[in-house]
Image (cartoon, one colour):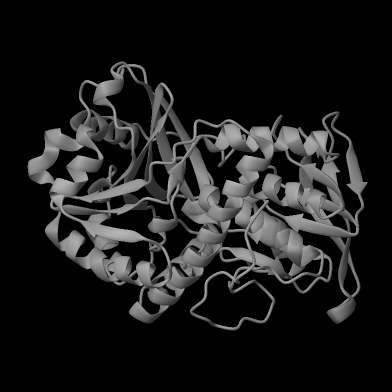
Length: 438
C-alpha cells in the first residue's frame, strides 16, 4: 500500500521505518525542515520503562492543589477558557483512582518494555550512534513518604516483568557516587538496570536518514491543513491530505492509508472528522549544560523525584529535563522554571558543568489523562493513530512504530496492549513469546 505518515518525530519516523520494512510505499510529511525538530528535539533522553507510573495517581490531586500558583512547581496548571483543558482535567481526576492507576501502569509497562526490546534490535541492525548509555536508570527520593508511597508501584512493575528494585541510600550512592554530596538528604531509591538513555534527536535523525536510504519519501517544510473524507459509517475513509508546500501552494496528496502522528497537534486535525482525542499539550522544559569535570558529573541516568527532573549524560553534555506546564500551545520560555532547573542541578552537581551558559528548550508533550497513548484504528477504515505518548514518547517510540506497522498491515502486534479501536484480552503476560527483533 501507499501510506502517508503525518509527523516526523520519534513516533512518526519509527512508524515510517517499520511500515517500509513491511513492504509499504511510505511518505512522511512534516512542517519542520527535518526530523525530530519539535517535541523529540531536546527531551530528557531516558528509555525509562521504570517510569511507567502515570501523572494521574491517587496522590496527584493534592499535589496539584499544593503547586497551584507556584511558578517553579513541577506541575503548573494555568486555568484557561478552553473546553478541552477543563474536559482533560476532569478526565485526569477520574484516572487518579487506585484501580485505574494500576491498569494504566500495566498498559504503559507493556508498550514501554516492548519498545525497549525493539530499540535494542533496531540499534543492532542500523548501528545508529546517539550517545546511548546502557547503565540503567536510578530514581532517588528525598522525602520519606514519597519513597514509601513508591513501593507498591515498584512491586507492581516487578510483577509485570520490569525489574524496578527498591534500594537503600547506600545503594543509591554506590550506583552513582556523584550523588554523595546530598547523601544525608536521600532516603532511598529504586534502580532498573535494563533502562537506558540516549539522545532522541540524534537517534530519530539517524533513523530518518536510514529510512530515506531505504526508500521512504520525506516531505519537509510541508504543512498539513486538513484530511479529506468521503462516505459514512463503515464505508467512511480518508481520500487525501491537504498540505501547503514549501513554495506556498495548496496541494492534495493521496494514499491508501494515513497515520496521524502529530503529537499535541493531532487533536485539532482529528476533531473536524468527529474524532475527539483527549490530548492536551504539556509544556516540558529542558536545560543542556557542557560538562567541565566528567568525574563530578553523573554517569547513570537519574530521576530526581522531589523535583520531577530527569538527568542524562550525553557524552560531554548533561541534559536535565522535566516539569510540566498546562498552558495551551505556547512554547515561550518561563524564566522562573528555567532557573529552577539550573538551581537544582547546581545543588546536585556543583562542580560538574558550565552553569553560566545553559541551553534552554521547551516542547509540547502530547498528554492523555491516563498517560496511555492512542495506537490503532479509527472509525475511518484507512486512518490510523499513533499519538498521545506524553512524557514517554522516546521510551515508547520504536515499539509504537512497530505495532502500528503491524496494525496497518493487518497483523496482530506481539505486545498485549489496549490498542485503540481493537479487541483487548487482559493477560498477565505483557509480551507474547515471539522474540522481539528489528
